[in-house]
Length: 480
Image 1 (cartoon, rainbow, N blue to C red):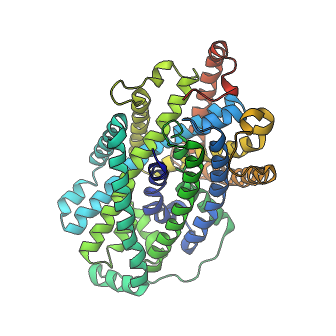
Image 2 (cartoon, one colour; image 1 turned 180 degrees about the vertical axis):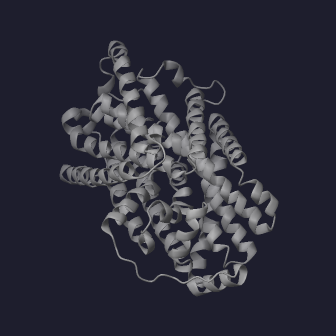
Image 3 (tube, rainbow, N blue to C red; image 1 turned 90 degrees about the vertical axis):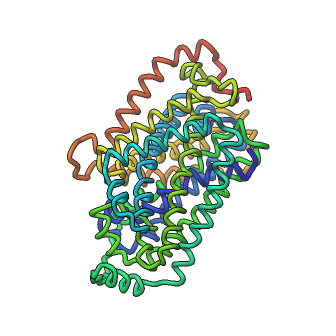
């Protein structure tokens, strides 16, 4: 995998629901955020950027598959390395299912705009939506198992199409404004929209929204999982991480500004209460049918493109655990023909399917998003802590760092990132525990704690076996 494909893996893991759904459904999940979505988006990028730099620095010293697991297990502690990566694995595996579930409304909107109302209504049926999402998961499980050119020829063309069709949104934001949207809704639905110009800024609401928007910047860690497959990984993986985070962050902001420049936030908030809304669905009011459909197709491709990259990412975590004997060696088995860790990939498909089924029965995909946010905040927090501790814990690997070698700057990134991400985690946890839900298991924090408790017990039971097999495992890098 060259720099282009490695960077594409990160970009495709980040873009999709993050840009086409979350900035608009946030109006439902965090009532009162109103016109402050873009500032919340910008604020949410701050901890992600610090985490990205921590990843880039650590990846230059440890260019192997396993990413966060490898970094924390060698630079902090084996247990925390497992917890950091299991947190990531669980959160991202669940969100693969969530994304597959979100894709269906985009397909629905294509048929709606083409005038096929019966098909559009059919896709609103819960069982149909769930079935399609499960089929998508297992299609890309197969793509990952076959790997090689199939993976590349799936990812790169869709990446190009995603950006080309997404650029229509940016241009639309320059051509149309809110008056065009208001008139269009009046003419097509006889609805009168009265934009709300002033709303009181609330720091509590703003910070709560920012913690959820943080989920939009999760995905660049997929790049760190390509260590065994990337060309010149010591240089290309850090470069790809930083390229991905800055390209995607810039695109996110421009895209969101474009949509909210056309669609009044009050309309978005009202619509989000009754149905899952998307950027293409909103813009279809002002765009000619042909261009509206193109945007919806582009958004659907962006979502679909999440799946192969994210499946690759989390399957390599399981592969790394198995190589260190934390998971059974069978999980690290390589397919004799395709040379991919097929057992690990299949297990990811199983957990992702649970995520899709959970989204279906919860009736709100934000439960899966909440779980992912909690998981990845803890993961990123431990990466920043690892950057602080690696010199003391594993000086040999610390000396391998080739990106930002100045220790003072490393510590600034580590301590500042730790503090900011910890604040975000506290806010997110408070928001989750204080929310009114029908059942206790709709609190993502409880689900996360149960899963992490099970993971901790499993690690404790497995630890003796790991120590007996190789006492020096966690001081050195795995063999390529």
